[in-house]
Amino acid sequence: MGGLDRQALAARAEELAAELAVHGVELIAMTFVDNSGVVRTKAVPLRRLAAAAAWGVGASNSFDFFAFNDEIVPGAHSQGPVGDLRLHLDLDRLTVLAAQPGWAWAPADRYDQDGEVHPLDQRGVAKRAARELAERGLTAKLAFEIEWMVTAETTPDDQNSAVLGPAYGYARLSQHADYLRTLASTLDNQGVRVEQIHPEYAAGQFELSVAPDGPVHAADTAVLVRETIRTVSRQHGLRATFTPKFSAQGVGNGGHVHLSLWQEGENVFAGGDGRFGLTGVAESFSGGVLARLPGLLAIGAPSVVSYLRLEPHHWVGVYTAWGLENREAPLRLVTGAPEERSRAANLEVKCFDQTANPYLVVAGLLFAGLAGLDEETSLPEPVDVDPGSLSEEDRQRLGIARLPVTLADAVAAFEADPVLTGSFGAPLATTLMDVRRGEIGIFEGKTPEEITEAMRWVY
Image 1 (tube, rainbow, N blue to C red):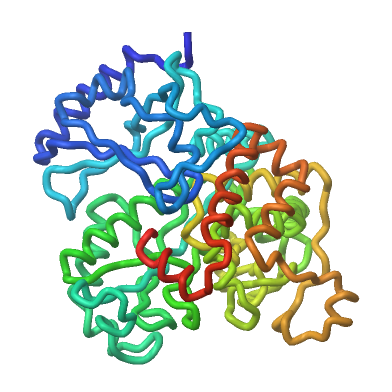
Image 2: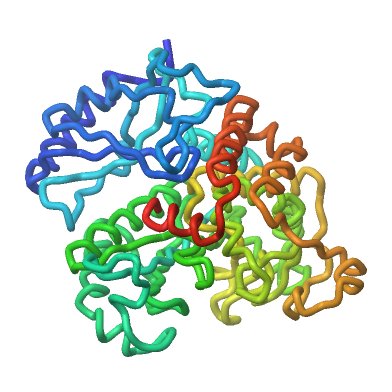
C-alpha cells in the first residue's frame, strides 16, 4: 500500500546519519511551505532520522488553511482538528547548515498515513508539473532572485537603521562586507552556487542570484537561501525581511523567477527562427504564461500586501506585455551575450514576490506553459517601451491590459481559468483561494500603512 519503499528509505537514512554525525549534526529541520507562503518546520534528532524517513513525522491537515498570521481560515476541504499527515524529508536534499552548528535541513513532502502523496502537497504538485513537462521531452531550469532588506535588530522598523549609502553603491557593500562575505561563503558551504550579490535600489536592500536548477530543487534552494539569509543576518546584528513592501511609500522586494526550457540538451530560448532567437516551443510556452498571468498572480503575488508593490513605473511589470530586456514588462526575455545565448537565454517573470510558495510558483508557471504548448499559443508583438507610458488607446490597440490591482481581482482571474484550476486539482485550487479570501477578510478596511506594518516581519 502506498508509494513509499520504507525499507529502502530507512537503510539510506542510516547511511546518511553516519555521515551527518561526522559533521556534528544532532538535529534535522524539515520544512514545508504552506498556502500563505510561510515556511513551517518540524525537527527530529539525528538518531530518529531513519524512522522519520521511513514513517514520516506527524503534521496536522490544518496547515493547509493557515493564514499569514497563523489564523486557521475555514475552507471547503477543511477537516478542522481531525486527521493527520506524515512529513517525509527528501534525503537527496539533506544539507548541513553551515551557520547553525549541530543542525541539518531537508525539505519535506507530505503524505497520508497510507504513503500516498497528499493532494494538497505543494511540493508534490511541483513534482507533478515537472513530470508532465518531461513527458513532452522537455526539462526546465529555474532560479529565484532573492531581494531582502535589513535593519538593525535594535531598531527593526527603521528602514535606514542598518545600511547607509546610495542605491547600488559600493558604500553599502563596504559597510557590510563581512556580512555579505559570510553569507556567500555559508551558502557555498551548503552547496548553493551564488552567481551575484549586490546592494539594491531600496534603503537597506540587497539582492542575491543563484545558479539555475531543476524546478523542484530550485524551489528548495529558494527556501534554503532565505532561511540562511535570516540566520546570518541575525548573527550580524541585523534583521532581514523579504516582504513585498516594507512601508506603504517605499520600494519593495520582488521574487523574480528566471526560467529556461531544454530539449535534447538544447536551450529552446535560443537558436530558433523566431523573434530574438526564440524557437516555436519557447514562444508557445511563453505565450501560455503571458495569457494566464492574471490568474497566476493569485499564486505568485498571493498576499494583500503584494498589490501595494505592483505599481506602474516601478520595474515590476503590471501590464500584460513582454519584451526583450524590458524591465517594465512582467515577462522580460533575457538573451545574454551572443557567445553565451545557448546557455543563458531565459524568461524572467518580474511580477511575483516572496510571499509566494515557491513550489506553487513552479507548478503554476509549468502548467501555464504546458497549456501554451497544447494551444500552440503565439506571443503578441514585443513591447520596447514602458507599457505604462503608452496611452490607453495604444494599449488597447496592442492588446495590453492592466494586471489585477487587488488580490480579489487575481482570485477571480484564477477561478475563471480552467487550465489553472484543473491543473492544480480541485482540492488544492479551492483551498488556495479559500486562504486568499481569508486574508482579504483579515485586511478589510485596513490602510496601506496598517497592511505593510502587519506583514513587515512575516516573510
